[in-house]
Length: 195
Image (cartoon, rainbow, N blue to C red; front, side, top):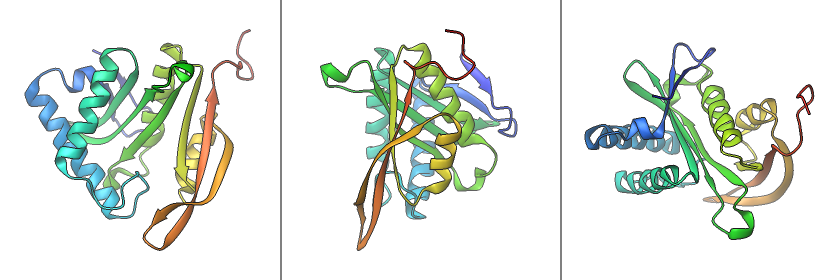
């Protein structure tokens, strides 16, 4: 069992994907809870890649693909639980293009609105960063909507650096936002790391 307790995360437990989908009933509960979180966040304007809240089958299909990639070592998926309630999730996946296989993209980190401010985003992201490091990922990338300053500050505090920006690239109705690209390069030792 791969569980970590999030220190600042108010007693949350961060659970590995294979435990989350260890049986069909648990997998269905995880998918339904993940859908609830993602749909509520998108309905509230969160920058998760959807303009309208995703349908349950969209989230289930997304998670099935990520879990398949986890089983082959090409992804990591984590869930944050407080008690028996899923309150957050996040994942990364290796790039599919052969020349990009040493690298992965952190594609979603989502925490239920009622659990914001508890350190769960930090705990999930830190666990996923460690998963990427253990998996031998060379560069972990992500992109975020430019107005998502809270997430961008979190990523910077965990060592991600901005490497580019597409001005006005993200379209949400008539509104336009920058798309910000960040990376964490595991090939370069962090200050204080043994060489």
